[in-house]
Every structure is written in C-alpha cells, then in structure tokens.
Length: 163
Image (tube, rainbow, N blue to C red; front, side, top):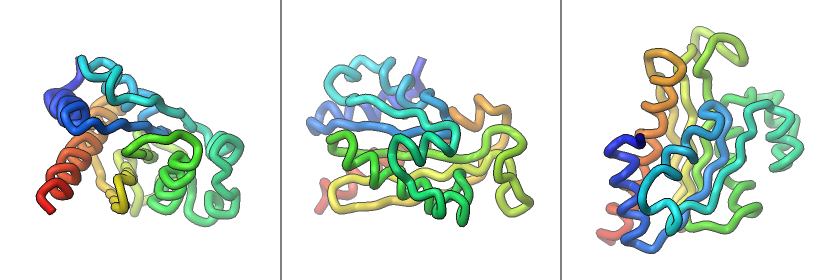
C-alpha cells in the first residue's frame, strides 16, 4: 500500500492534469510501483524504466560511459543525465530519476555510505537535484526515498502554482 505522501502526490498530479514517468536504479521499480497502486495511476502514470545495472544506463538511455566512470553509476551527475535522457525517451510532464546505494558494495565510500540516494526531478523549466542519506534496511531506505520524491513533486507543484 502506498504511503500517504505518495497518495497525496498522485491526487495532486491528477487534479493538475499532470503525468509522470520514472527512471530508477536504486529503487528497482518500486517507485513506479508505489504510484501504480494509487487510485489516480491511470490518469498520471506513463511508466518507468529500471536501469539497475550501469550498462543499462548506457545501452537504453545512452548515458555516456565516461560520465559513469568519472562520477560512478550512483551519483548526482548520472542521475541528472538519466532524467534528461528520459525526457527525450518518454513524453510526460514530470521526469524523475533515482540512483543510490541501498546495500553495501557498488560505489560505496565513507563519503557516500549505504543509504545515499540521488534524486533528480524535471518539471516545466525546473531541474531539482537532491542528495540525502537514509538509514535502515534496503526497503526502508527505498520507501524513505520514494516519499522524498513525492514530497519534492508536491512542493514544486505548489511552488510553481503560487507564481
């Protein structure tokens, strides 16, 4: 069952007539699935791509290998690139990308511990980048990150609507 934040975000998207699409690494499709479980999913959700392995980021969305090698697959730079390339791949009003570390390994470092999540949301002319560290099990990290995506979208819609 989706969180109250995801449900609120879905209702707001439907009320505003907005559509959303996701490209996911760390959440492996869970972000899209949570939105798919809302009553408004048929009105708002275009779909999603899961690019868990770095080679899929390169092969499907054509993220340059040199960018991934320079910054790692789980980085703000690669997440932003995923969102930009998704926008060219699937039309929607909002494009959200997420990468990060929910388990040990990968590009984990003392500066980028397990729980580090990168989010990038494109909405209208706005590009929002978020990097946060969450604590808990892999599922708890995913669910906190999913709520953060939903909150970011709610905040941006409310902010852009007030202008």
